[in-house]
Amino acid sequence: MGEKNETKKSVVKFAGIEVPPELTKGNFFFLFFNTFLMGILTCVLAILQPAFLKNIIKVSPDFFGSINGLLMNINEVATLALAALIGALSDKVGRKILAFLGFAVLTIFFYLLGLSNGIASFLHIPAGVSSQVCALLSFVPSQSAQFTGFAPGLFITYIIRLFIGIGIVLLFPQFITMAADYTYEKDRGKGMAFNGLMMGVASVAVFAVLASVQKIYGVESLFPIVSAIALTGALCTWIFLKERLPEQKQEKKGLGEIFGIVRKSPALKASYLCTLVTRADMIIIAAFLVSWAVKVGDTYGLTSEAATQKIALPMIAMSMVTLIAFPVVGILLDKWGRVPTIILALASGGAGMVLLSVCSDPFSGMVFIGVVLVAVGIAGSMAGANTLATDVSPGGMVGTILGGLNTMQPISIMFFVGLGGYLFDAFSPGWAFAIKGAANLILCVWLFMVKGRISASLHQKM
Image (cartoon, rainbow, N blue to C red; front, side, top):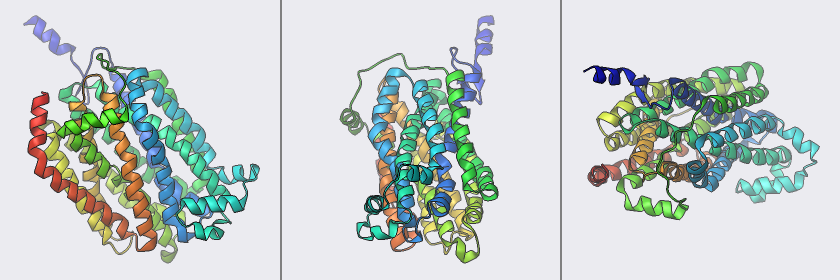
């Protein structure tokens, strides 16, 4: 009896998650604190970029949606090119060093982003050539003359955003994978949900705090602040995080081999398809809802900063719902099941996007209902897909499988943001949300039809 009691006493928990003996509560705290900092760095572009393009780069309103969408997609080009490689590399060299490098890259290039016009002037970037390049990248090469006034600064912005994309792809997968490394299977749903919870807190910080700073002091004030946040993350990663890599090692797999493994597993196929369709949800909301508000702000007598702060209210509501949803999702994943939770998330997210597509303006009260439904969908699909993929990953390949999973994200974002940007400019902002909602609902129906096969594969794995 004494030995049993001693065993019970020796179990240490952090937020209900059992802490392995080789780790400490401090390691868990800084894992999730760094996730919070990383969340700020990935989310802040939603409020920073539209005002930056309008007030600093002076982009023409006629190309606002497509240019903003293209900048988001530059981020995803880096992810598509590097995510699988970095996932496999993290299994070999560890997560910590890659996360540190990601924070370091973002420290430098977020600061340089605010100096885009100055850098273009210093380098004497020719307006003629840069306007042709920028117009081509925006899929309107015949209208390059309309880019001349702002093309040099925009050209430098494209280059800097590519490096920011590299920094994010180095950083973003590591804390998801470390959450899997740090947790036992019985607590993994909670660990993934806590990871998402910190992303939600970061979103609140961006839209409640940084959006207010931007309104009061201007968009220029955010660049040194964001750079300092990235530097803090680099220091905390280097000093306070500890590796806990799986003991079992496998040979490095190429992307083709990873997808071969995925094709043979109904559960992995479901998690990859869920990521492929839903990872664009947050970007679609952040990019096009804020862009919509900034674009029509003049109609309501609002400056870019004032419009950004006003549209921040539903974004804050969305973030608050996410904070509540992630812990609930964690419990549902562990108690109700991975697949039923994902189906519920897809239905909620799809319904929310469709509702946003029929709103008359970005400041409509219906926007709040739409973003709340999308928030539930984001929480369930993100934590659900990550947990499901981790459960069925071959031994020693968690980082590799999650790296392949993260490759789905840029494909999703490049497609839906690219198509959404075109529909935003050519028809109306609502079309960007409608196409996304339809995709979520179609996947929801498919997943409901094959849930039996997925459950059977999960039992076989166990």
